[in-house]
Structures are given as structure tokens and as C-alpha cells.
Length: 263
Image (cartoon, rainbow, N blue to C red):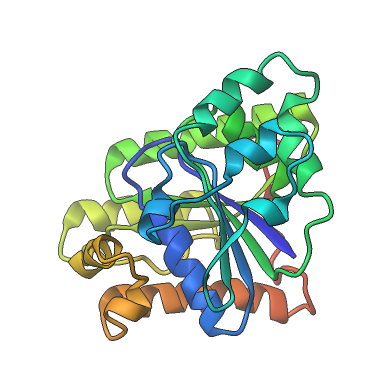
């Protein structure tokens, strides 16, 4: 089971769009996926039009609440562990507890039955994000095609290094995913070139700017349901194939050694 935090401290980089549509693409390849919404904004719940009875808040705060009580099936081979604005309250409650960064890991220790767990993380290094990072084995970083996003990537790497050293949990950056790419735009091309230079071999084919992706979200659908012939569907299908190729080529291990953030 691969546990992947989809993370960027800069907002507007298509983290939720990537989490949802990558999950959908993986499901089309007969993989089972759990989407965990770590953001109190509850974007994944909104995307799938789910009003949960129990959510991330209950799992983190209530000792007797089990993951199965919070997980909601939303599509064939896709489940979600939803979040609501109460997740922010959970952070306040957990702040004074020992081992507060490992509550999610402890509560999900016996989780099974999924090929992938994708964690959609909020744009900050708060306690919820720390729980996600400590639970995950690797990180995917969506990066929008603007220069401020490059600054955000540097901050992510510094913070992952800090988490690794202080919390003693190795977290790997496996893939960097360019988003909102427009090949006609010089800025897009320049940012992509800088990413490829810095992340040697870890940068995926870009997710092209495509209004159909936003439209799909507004209709509570994945891009494969809303417009399977769109650029967005093509790009997320290609991303899923990249993710799967890194597993299948080595019988369940990554084809290329991911970068351990230790520098």
C-alpha cells in the first residue's frame, strides 16, 4: 500500500484536483484508493457532494472511533475519509498531547485493503499536515507554472527536512507535478525547465491548463466522468501510468529511487 501526501504550501496549485483525478485514473486501472482530506475546508467532501456523519475530526479526537466509521465510498474502487471545518478544532485539541504528530498514523495502523492512500494536504505546515507527512511514505508536489510556486517548492523541501529530522520520519519526494501548464506561454516553459533542472527525473509530464477540470469539480464529477476526451483526462491518465510504472517495474517497489529529503 503506497501512502502519498499531495502537498504544497502554496495555495492554488491543484492539489485537490490532482488528488481526486489521480485517484479516479488509478481506479480505472483497477486499483483501490482511499482519499484522505486533511484540509478543514473539506474540498474533497464538497467535490463528491458528501455530508459525512463522522469525519477526520472524529477519527483524530475520539479514541473509540474507528476508520471504518468515517470512510465513505464515493465511486467504484474510491473511498474518502472526509474532512469538515471541525478538523481545525481537532488541531487545537491535539496540540497539547504527547505524540500529537502521530495520531493519524496510530489510528490508521491497521488500515488495509487499498493499493493507494492519497492525502490531500492544506497549504500550511500545521499539525494536520504534520500528521499527514508522518503517516505518508512519499510526497507528490503539484507546482503551478509561476515563479512564486518555485519559492513555495523550496519552502516545502526545507519543511520536509525539518519534519524528517525533528520527527525522525523519512519522507520521500517521488514526483513533482507541473500544473496549469500552457506551452504557448514562455513563463510556463521557463518554470518547467527550472523544475526539470532541480528535480532530475522526478518531474512528470505537465497537467495542461484546462477549464474542463474546474467544470468537473463544479458538477461533483471526476474529469473522466465529465469529459473523458479532454486534455485534463488525458493528462491525469498519463500521470497514473507514470505512478503505476514505478511500482510494477520492480514488483511493488519504485523503479527509481525517490529522493530522501535529508539535505
